[in-house]
Amino acid sequence: MEPIQASLKKWMRDNESFQKRFQEIRRETISDPEIQKVMEKHPQLSDSVIDRNLMRLYEYKSQSKNCEDCPSLAACKNILKGYTPLIEVDEQDVRLTYDRCYRKVQEDEQREKQTLIQSLYMPKDVLEASIEDLDHSDLERSNAIRETVQYLQSIGTKQAEKGLYFSGPFGVGKTYFLGAIAKELAERRIGSMLIYMPEFVREMKSSLKDDSVNRKVEEFKKVPVLMLDDIGSESLSAWFRDEILGSILQYRMMERLPIFFTSNYTMNQLENHLATSNRGDTEQLKAGRIMERIKQVSKEVPIFGTNRRNM
Image 1: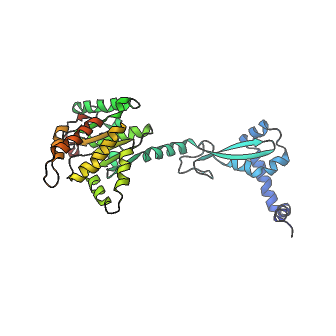
Image 2: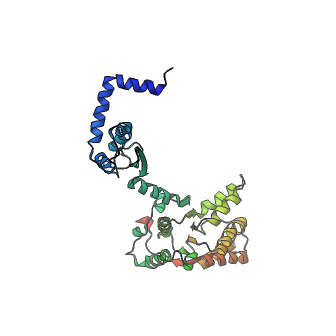
Image 3: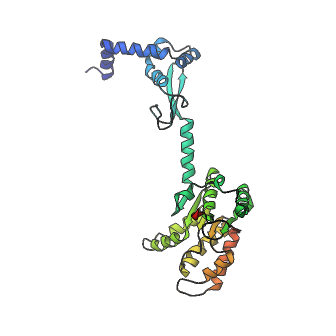
C-alpha cells in the first residue's frame, strides 16, 4: 500500500484548487513585511525551504505580535490566547515558539498576587482595599496611616517582625487597614491570611468533627503574615483561648512572624475579656499569658474618627 504521506503529496499536486490556494498563501506570505525581514536576515531560505516551511511562516504572519492587533486579552486573535509568536531559523529549518504577551504577563501577575491573599470570611471590599484609598485627610486616622506606612517601609528589617494592633470604636475602618496592608504585601510577593475571629472560632469548633484542627492550626501558624480581625468580639472557650489561639501566638512569637489585629478593645481591655470564658470562669493568669504574646507580635495603634458605616 502506498504510504499516506506520498498519497497526500500526490493529491496536493493533482488538485488544481488546492494548488491555486497554496500559491495565493505563498504570495501573501512572502510579500508580508515581517516575513521579508526574516528572509533578508536568512538568505539561506531558498524557495524549496520556504515551501517546506510555508505553513509556519503563514502562521507567524497571520498572528498578532505584542498585542498590536488585539484590543484586549479576552479578544486576542492568536491561536494561543495571550501568547505572541516568535520565529527562529536554524540552518534551513523554521521554528515557531510562543511567549506570553505583556497583557498575559500582567494578568498572571495579578492572579498570583490574589492567591497571596487568603481570607476566612472576609468581605470583598476589604480584600480590594488599598493604601491609596485610605482617607489621608482625616486627622484622627493620620497616626494609624503613618504607622501603616512605616511598617510597610520596614519590610525586610527586624522591625517588620512585629505587626500592628488596631484598636478603636466600631465602624472607624480598622478592618479596611488590614485589607490595604494585605494588598501591599501581595505586591511584594508576601502572602497573608485574613481571618474574621468569630467565624474562626466556629471554624475550629466544627473542625473537631473531621479531625482537621491540627492541620488548620499549622497553616495559621506558618503563613507569612497573619491577620486576626475583630478579636474580642467572639465568645471564647478556655480550649480555644489556650490550645488554639495560645498555640498560634506562641509559635509566631518564637519564629518572629508578625500578626495584625483589629479590636474594639484596647490591649488592656482585651486582657479582661480573655480572662472570662464562655462558662463564666475567670482565669486572669492565662489571659495575661495570651496578652504577653500579643504584645510580643504586635504594636498597639489606636484608630478614631467617624463611623464610616453610617456615611
